[in-house]
Length: 261
Image (cartoon, rainbow, N blue to C red):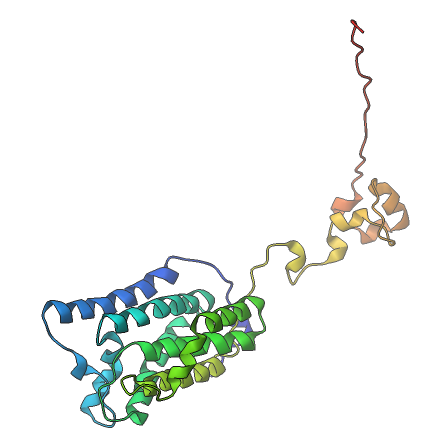
């Protein structure tokens, strides 16, 4: 399953690049507010491995957090990385997000130790892995730059792919990381088109039809009067705009003398 090159989309900013990531963050904080406001705990709705009841956590666990520091540490990278997904990969963003969401939870359910696994950190690792490896494989300077930014900002997250802290669900982190790599391979053919600002950057650019270049001769010398160039080049090979005579005239006016001097 891959996307052909003809399905590339140009990079452009729109309100949904911020709107949907913000909505996800608001949902997470809304759930946490309900827990605090009504003194309840939704931890039992998290992923509990290898039990039928624990499968519901695949859907609900990313919205449940154990405390303020937990939700805060997940919110910022989740917002930044999801914005990167929605901006650079707009035609596959929902597929990556939804498939990654479900696959990360399902893999956690399969490999994790017996405990309730909650939090959106698995989604954060999925997005980070997808954006990093997709950017490196794309060979586009904008996406490679994004990959380097991810390494600079979140490179230290790699340590939490291993059981360094018994209170942290490293299984959820590892699941998200692996799923992100797999998604980057699945959608390897989908690369956004670079924005073309100048005529010579476009694929259909033909230097022979460039009016500006017709001012230069074969030696690279600038020809002020195009007729001089046309004497050396057959008119049939020149575009209509070049055939028109353009002459630059310089007019010098003698300065009026001051009668007092």
